[in-house]
Image 1: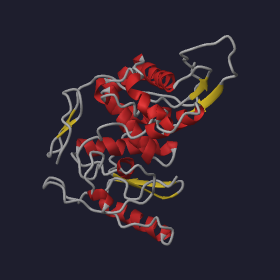
Image 2: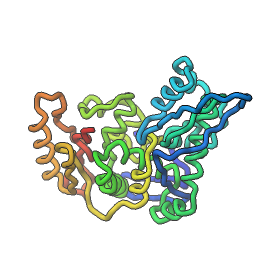
Image 3: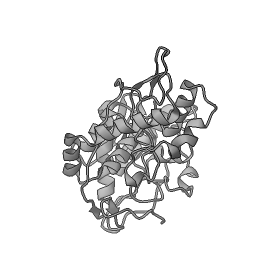
Length: 306
C-alpha cells in the first residue's frame, strides 16, 4: 500500500490500528460572510462591484471556473494563475489551495484578477483557521490545521444534513483510531472528478491516492472547501462508537457500530432505490486483524443523497 509519508506532526496509522498524532492547530470557518475584495489596480472611475458566491463544499476546480466566469476570462485562466498568486498556504498543502478557498460572498471590484481573488480567499481562510479558539480545538483533538481541514472536507461531502456532521466526524475518528480504511465514497468521487451517489466495486479498486478504500489514513489533501458547520464537527465530534452510516432516504441517515445492522440498512436503501440507478451492492474489504472480529465494510456504503 503506497502512502505519502507525513511529517511527525501528522496522523500516523499502523496496521495494528495505533493512532499517533502531534498537535499543531485546528480549524473553524464560515460561509456567506462578506469579505473585502483586494484589487491590483484602481482607476478614477470604478464599476459597481458584483459579487462572487463560493458555497460550502465546492471543490477548487469549481471555484476556478466561477472566477473565470466572474472576470469573463477564458476557461482555465484562474487555474493557470495559481503559481504566480503568492498564496499563503501551509507547507502540507504543497501549493494546492484545495480546502483554503474560504466559502463566502466576495465583492468583485474593478481591477480584480484571478490572483487577487485567490489571495483574498486564502488569506481569509488563514485568519479564520489560525484564530486562538481554533488552535485550542486542534490541541484538544490532537491534530494540525491541515488535518482538520481535510477531515472537515470529508464531513462536508458525506453528511446529508448539518445535524449529521458530528456523527460523520466521529465515524472518521473511530476508523482512524482502529486502523481501518476510511472507505468514503466522497474521496473516490474526488479522484474521479464527479459527484454521484453510486460507487461500484470497480471504482473502489482504482489506483489513486484519494482511494480511501485501498489506502489507509486521510487523503493527501482536502477534497473540497468546507464550511463552518463541518469545521465545528471536525473539532467537536460527539461521543459514539459508530463505524458505518447510510442515508436510507432524505432525512434518514443511520449510524451504527454493528456491521450486520449496517448491511440491513444498506439493503433497505437498495430496496427503496431499485430502478433509480442508485441501488448498489456495497463492496467488502478483507476481514479485520484477529483482534477485530467483524468484517470491514465501507463507512458509507450508500452515500448521502443530496
